[in-house]
Amino acid sequence: MLTDIATVFWRDWVVLHRRLGTFILSRMITPILYLVAFGWGVGRSVQVSQGNYLDYIVPGILALNSMNISFNSVASPLNMSRLYHKTLEEYLVAPISSLSFIIGKVLAGTLRGMISSVIIILLAYVFGAKFQMTLFFWLVIILNCLVFSSLGFVAAMLIPSHEEMGNFSTYVLLPMSFLCATFFSIDKLPALVRWVLELLPLTHASHALRAIGSGGEAAGLSWLIMLVYIVVLLGISVWTMEKVRE
Amino acid sequence: MIQIRNLIKKFGERFAVDGISLHIKQGEIFGLLGPNGAGKTTMIRMLTMLTRPTAGMLSINGWQLPQDEQKVKQILGIVPQHFNLDADLTARENLELHGRLQHIPGEKRTKRILELLEYVELSERADDKVQNLSGGMKRRLMIARALLHEPQVLFLDEPTVGLDPQVRRRLWDLIRRMATDKLTVMLTTHYIEEAEFLCGRVAILEKGKLIALNSPAELCQRLGVYVVEWNVDEGRQTKFFHSREEAAAFAGTLTMTTTIRRSNLEDVFVELTGRKVVD
Image 1 (cartoon, chains in turn brown, yellow):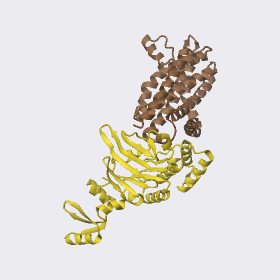
Image 2: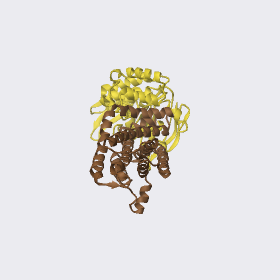
Image 3: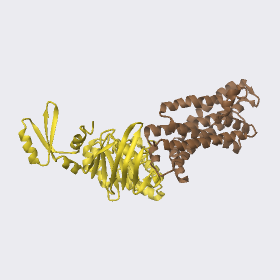
Image 4: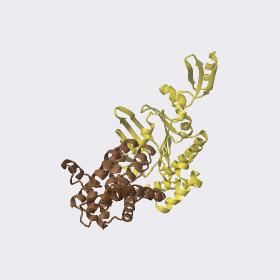
């Protein structure tokens, strides 16, 4: 099984390696815009209870960016592979388990999310942000990438057209990007909205990164929710691999 | 080698494959012939485990599907109708990926890749991205990929569709060269001449049902080896005969211009279904 996971991952690594320069450059644009607009622009006239607004939003930007990159690294190519290029068939007819394929793809998406996170961290330091990086800080980023790579896998396998993939991002990822404690604290939001947001994994990734980044500890609930999402989404992914053969 | 018993595939209320039973022997080149929508591709997809049957029994090399799926996948080579090569990889990388997925050990894999690139005459384009290859080259690369792990059964779904006649002929030669006692080939086509040239036996499908099964020569023999054709106001008329003399004698009784020729699978198909294969 490990060999099969490595094979699936190898294919994505070959493609990424060939485009690594372009990938890194393109991943710098959005974080730079966020850091300029919210860090230097809005941030200089805003103070939050935790101190500097730039320090406050960096964990949020890390969370939302790793979400977007991990999701899109898996969702869009896999959806195209299933519906248009039909390259998914090469894996469906191969003597490998569905889980090997899923884990290989999810890990490849996670790697891309991690690379973009490294870029943001370096840029954040350049912009003067201060936060602590520990192993747990990285573990939260890895879990967040795993959650959204897995979500990308499920979306790619279930959504019936590439156009509708765009809608999924608009209706699901975009609202999360802004509402899940990325740019502001959700404490002052109406209770019902807060309750809904507390169910979403990105909120917990933002909370956990902010807590660890400011020298504290992530809540147990945040770890639990991210882990539950990963397990459930991987389970659904296995089911989609059978459904695609109907 | 391949046993199919009462195979059914329904999409909603529509039968794509409707109760087909077949037995294909080891080393045979077997053709599935029929017009678009006859159920040929659905048959291949079920045999290659890309689509689950609604009902029926499938076994390959004595292994049942889907129970022995992983074992069966190791002995199947598949060339689908559409180009499903990975456009982000080179020709060599596509073969490398397939070899790894089929668990071919490293050294043997490298050797087989070189051999097959040579075999399909793509050695010089090995490091080109797939998107830069022509249609015929892509098809040859797909055949190389399907043969890489030395399969016992090769499925070719419309292997020459969309290719120009010269390239088609080259691929036919390649398929004939591949067919050995060890390799069973099942191909689908709606090109009559392809089935006649390549296949030992053909199954003619229409609307998901098996309507004829035999060698192309036997099917023509049963219908009549010679055909007289003539035109009337209602369209082209045909009559079949078992000898040229009978056909010539009949043609002599007609007052209009006639043609005498040998019958072919197209005639068999038209007689059985009332329409042409390419309709």
